[in-house]
Image 1 (cartoon, rainbow, N blue to C red):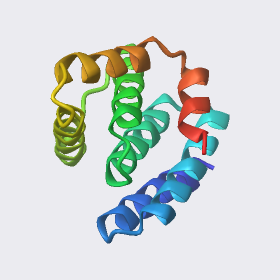
Image 2 (tube, one colour; image 1 turned 60 degrees about the vertical axis):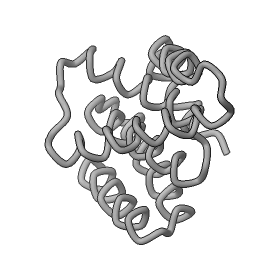
Image 3 (cartoon, rainbow, N blue to C red; image 1 turned 30 degrees about the vertical axis):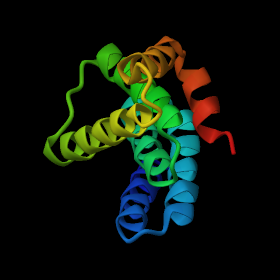
Image 4 (spheres, rainbow, N blue to C red; image 1 turned 45 degrees about the vertical axis):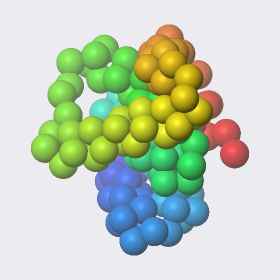
Length: 134
């Protein structure tokens, strides 16, 4: 099952890169469901990060910020840093969420930080449930 979940994550990233956000979301959700069943935090983090990037692609920056926060909390729990490609995708997702939340000319830093902090406060089970919501 681990290889299947990892394969879904890779396929989801390809789908997102070619603009098939619906397919990417479906694949990331499948991967996250399997990862949760396996209780594999590394794969859970990858699924949360992937769904955050997909949320940005679909115009949902607040959702992306919450998912980024949830992924960051899980990474901190297990002491895993982002790899090179993961860091690039993560940084682009963070920048896009910050920029999108800046648009209403409000305290965008607060909007991003509040959503990110809300994600960090989620348990793993809450983060998975949130990520799998339609």
